Length: 329
Image (cartoon, one colour):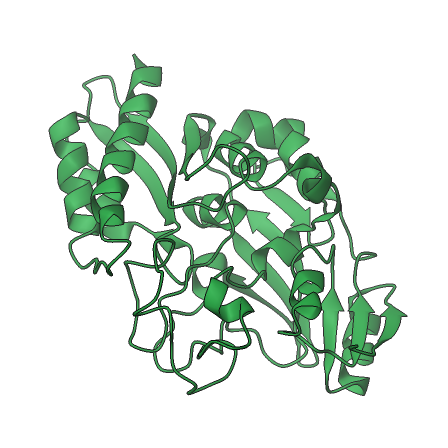
């Protein structure tokens, strides 16, 4: 049995102080991931610091931006009027991500920091560099249908499981952090790391640092956006491939601007910057969409069981962009 103490923080400052007092302490949000990991003895903290009293406010600002407290529940965020009307891809990504019961307790901050669902990471009998540095990676030659095709390394081919993060990365979201050294901000797309040689180091968070809020900048054409998740079953499975996209087309049928991110394909939510660059200024048609998808997946590497994801990702990008193009008609 994993024996631990429990402490409830009233704000970010008290949470950080409590965390510093216990070197093996973990922050606890909704617990939908951490409790699972503790049950499997992957995580064995000596103390839990409950941060659910951090702000859960969702503030719509006059310029069209949103400031979302890290303590906001996923259900509240998905249902918020400003999210549904101005950033529908975010609402749809959350609804695709988990059951209503889980969304009711899962927090925004916790969702961002959830760890991979790789079966070898959860299996203490398997070799996993993410669980134990330099142990090896059994997923490379094992069952890897759900694993990464972009940004991988010999050390790790795991994927980041969050649907919400894919939408937030597409929206240029910024995370606000607080730690012993004070407050700072970081683009969400820079928060998670690619595996390299140290997949156990998953984010750019400093020791004892805490997510306090997420900010979404204004993006007028995000009103025409969507999120599509391709999975093995319809009922809350993790993504084989997912696409978050927003598309702005002018009256001549030319792409004025675009946002595109992929899930289920990498160790982090994958911003499709190559595809975006190719699409801007080009005619919005199937040929252009396919060319952009080809460019984005040019460096993809498939494993024994997941090579199909490369073509699946390309087709899903094209299908999503075609759907958004149809909304302009």
